[in-house]
Length: 270
Image (cartoon, rainbow, N blue to C red):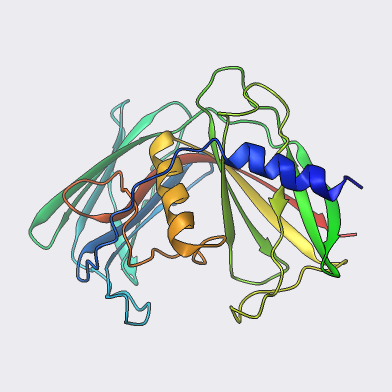
């Protein structure tokens, strides 16, 4: 078992070098919110379009149902998505390939929104190792994603993980500003139940942790870094907050468009 001080010091060293991100926290109720993902896994892929709500309202986002949504890439592939339900539009034959640049165009409520995202090369997700430390009488578990960062500087990663069959996702983002070209040394800290959120769980021996590793572009890294600052913890459970971190979508839309790779691993806590 690693020394507690070493774990905490390592986390400080790896996070303290990240630059601060200026957040525009206007209360923009009624704005278009776009959540769009394309991956290197087989489709269909989904684009969800809703309207933002005020800070004081419940997180019930009205769906936008009559939009025109077009995906294309730099090889000439293009498709107009079909509406499904709940603000979601899906592809039928579109494919995601590493290295390609993807463009999203949306016509909705008299305005056009566009965004681009380039899918990075996939970095092998080789496995997970487990550690733990005791603080204040409580055991906190950590997982170390096993992967080696490529030599070229500029790789960005998003990790999300769930506990057992709980729907809530926890997010963390890594960059290679420290530890570039080396085996990963930054752990994921598994959540403890602090009583502030009814969806929180105390991770104990026997729990299964499902981890997804994404290689993301720099715009999406910036977006999620800001989103984590806003939420103050491991993310908002997969939704978009009514605050507005810097989006890669133009014309005042909130949200993001991400072309990324996906690898998944699971581990049972011992």
